[in-house]
Length: 173
Image 1 (cartoon, rainbow, N blue to C red):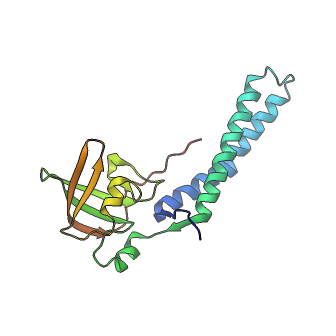
Image 2: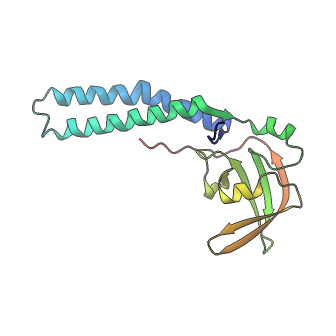
Image 3: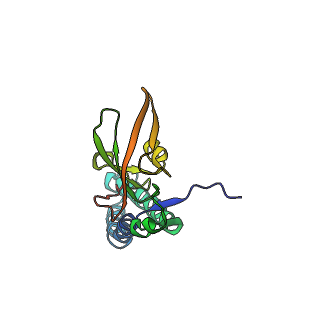
């Protein structure tokens, strides 16, 4: 029995990951290899800062290439529009959810993958406390979120499935 957590992502996230992988493979890695080779040709490598830095940077690039390759291979890409057709009025991955907090203030959250969350833009991971609390709820339900300062209640006002804007993965190279 597999215990791995699914890697859900939106089509926009998958496309950004593919674009970053392509850039690393065909632009950044070859350029870094060339710079390391040029630095190595200058003689003593033990005190050659350009060579040492270049090798370190190359390891970071290779690590990111490995991460992106595995992530893309194992991803379950979920189109929010298609998800909405089977959601039956419930919050699932890809939903855009409008909620009201205890003070009546309305907030909009989009349920996205762990690689695409951005709290400032209302993009919350399906594995985050907010995402977990909202999952499978319906309009009118109250989601209870446990926070370090207590619990927070959010009433679900609306659920939509539409393309999610503002997805940006963060490159670590």
